[in-house]
Amino acid sequence: MTGTLVNVAAVVLGGLIGTVLGGRVSDRLRTTLTDVLGVFVVVLGIGDALGTFGDVLADALGRAAVLVVLGSLLVGAVAGELLRIEDRLERLGAWLRDRATREAGRSPSRARFVEGFVVTSLVITVGPLAVLGAFADGLSGDWTLLAVKSLLDGPVALAFASVFGVGVVFAVLPMFAWQGGLSVAAATVGSTVSEPAVAALSAVGGFLVIGIGLRLLELRQVRVANLLPALLVAPLVVALWP
Image (tube, rainbow, N blue to C red; front, side):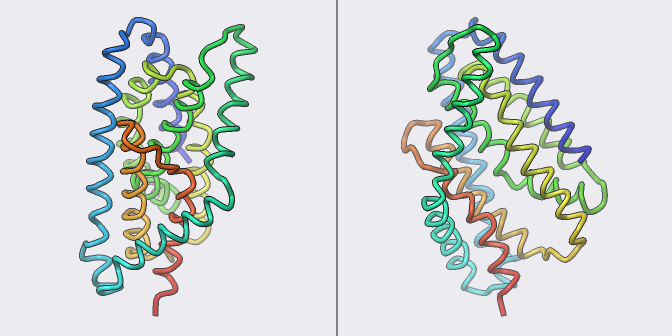
């Protein structure tokens, strides 16, 4: 769990600095920063999604690799819509916003707080570094990957907070639950998780990251949170593959 705690500290620090600087950033610069982040996130997601066609999945699944990734996304989408994950995450963000602003005596925009919480939660939680780093931390205590992720997440949180405000800081809650849970699970199950299963999870995560980028660029409000179950479906299918 050491790596996850370091990651939490980096996001909180970046988020707080960004919140303080937010009032000094012009609307034009905020828009440009959001556009840059959106383009970067799309490219990052494409890089991960291309793992669908990589050697690891091809060797394990053959030509069915593409169908497994696509099927996982479709099944995950149906499950997520039925569970209304995005709505629940937004309600959690709204509840945190109301509690935080009541204690602080302030009234920032509800929409901006929720959007900052939701978007940042997805960006810092969904990526393959979160999964691989948490697994490495749980399996061997090696939190190098999560240290690298912290160096990436800190500036991201700062940039997001300068645009969306303090809601970004609360994104550490789902991140801590996800990465911490993965580390505990990895420590429990040991090294039974195969490389193809991790590759499938990373490929699916790449598609979700692309969806986040599209949201940031305001091209399409993809309900990415409702696709999160796909991250469980993909490795499970690979594990059960004959």
